[in-house]
Amino acid sequence: MYAVDSGTALKRQRNNVAAKKYRQKKIDRITELEMELKGVKDERDDLKIRLARQEAEASALRSMLRMKAGSEK
Image (tube, rainbow, N blue to C red):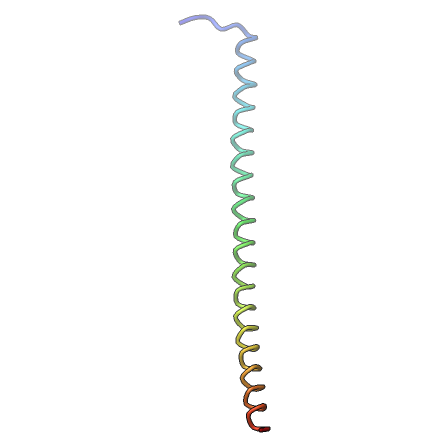
């Protein structure tokens, strides 16, 4: 084995702390992005449901207009 001076040991310790901090920050960012993705997917699903309801309502109203127009002839 070789002897490690205190400067090198301190540098390694700082590097280990920095690496650990970087890895944690990366994990936190991934978690944040996953939560944001879930929110966007939930919003998309809600909008799809609203669109389907509005399309059904529009179709029903068109049908009612056709029936009314047909009865007035």
